[in-house]
Length: 243
Image 1: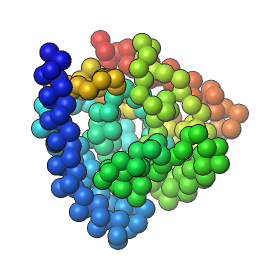
Image 2: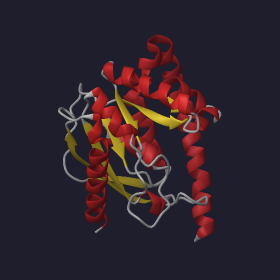
Image 3: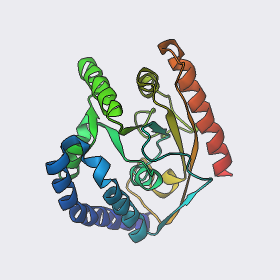
Image 4: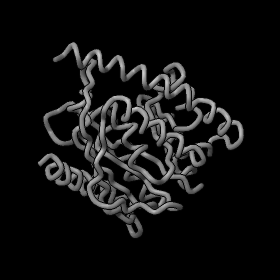
């Protein structure tokens, strides 16, 4: 029933806010000590926060196959994007600390925006100069040994297709930085929390990490081919997960 899903969405917002307030002191201390490298030391807090959201909203997660990521290695992490639930799921799913690439407008959200501005990276996609500056900043972060998480679709997929259009940025970044692409495939988040409307319901989320793709030997001219390969791999995995 829609009214019940709306009520559960309100409850989810309450849970999100309360857990964020509990986690906030850890982020403040970490930012004061380590600055923009704070996420490396508070990734465990982010995972606890995300698991708490799922616990108190009745959402279970199921990983398909072992996680092929190695702690201490830095990656360009990419995933399909279906729902607001993808963000806490990425924290739960990833054993390696990472910085999200987030839309600049999210940095203006009260409380959450402060954390995003200080721990993650933001980009104004409407400003070419800002996009180029963000690309250079992302290269610096990867050179420091910290992973980056980017949604190649740029926003949540509301189409009938498994994935929407993929942009080149994440793949160009991986090639230029010579970092492997790690691929997370997420299923069912849009069934529990649709991209449109205000609804939430308990249920199970399924995810799978695919084998990372090394970008050693790739040239910038291979960007589109790498992008299309990753998109096809995600589409194929989604088809299997949904069955």
